[in-house]
Length: 196
Ligand code: B4P
Image (cartoon, rainbow, N blue to C red; front, side, top):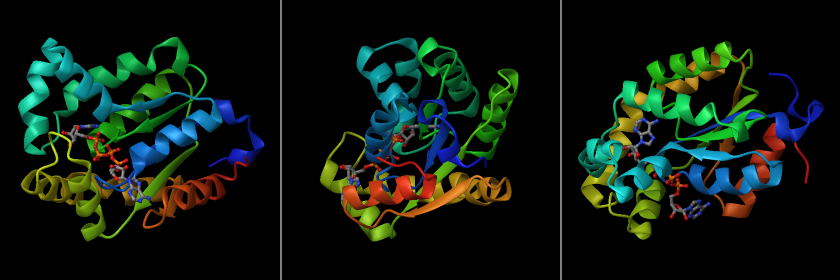
């Protein structure tokens, strides 16, 4: 990637990748605020759709509750629409998307259509026992132990291949997520070469 420090921070296009419970949502919000770019969490968007009872929410509610992934076509529509909004025209931090190789292809297409490119993919990881502990401590509706374990399996099967994919593109920045929230945040900023 181009050295992130060589560009204005608010022009960055970033992806936050990691297993459920790795802290990616937590870190995305802190980092996006510091960089002045929107944090776009597909998990959060889907939860809001479920809460509002919209057609999308009704379609995805049981899928999310089971720990499975929402289908790639639906996610493509959701993300394409969100990234077309004005606030995403000058950078964003995608949290939880892409989650499959097909979604990575879709994102590559969206970027190509707008003649833009990703600057970096931040990969935050932690041991599975810690991931499960965090998710269970959070007690969200989709955080029962069975669902949490299933989400880890889905991650290993469908999302983990993205690590190699983005490594191959020279975009991957690995950060140890098994530390305090502040320490992880410092690690991410060091990995990106952004100060502050
Ligand atoms: P997400 O909302 O993305 O859920 P998540 O993977 O658990 O991550 P989240 O960001 O919320 O939690 P975090 O690790 O920050 O997805 C939910 C569901 O939506 C998916 O299962 C799927 O069904 C659907 N979905 C979303 N995107 C999709 C896509 N692209 N394709 C298909 N389906 C999709 O934090 C976890 C907990 O750890 C928090 O309580 C936090 O406070 C704590 N924590 C964070 N950092 C910590 C640290 N350093 N130390 C201690 N605790 C920490």
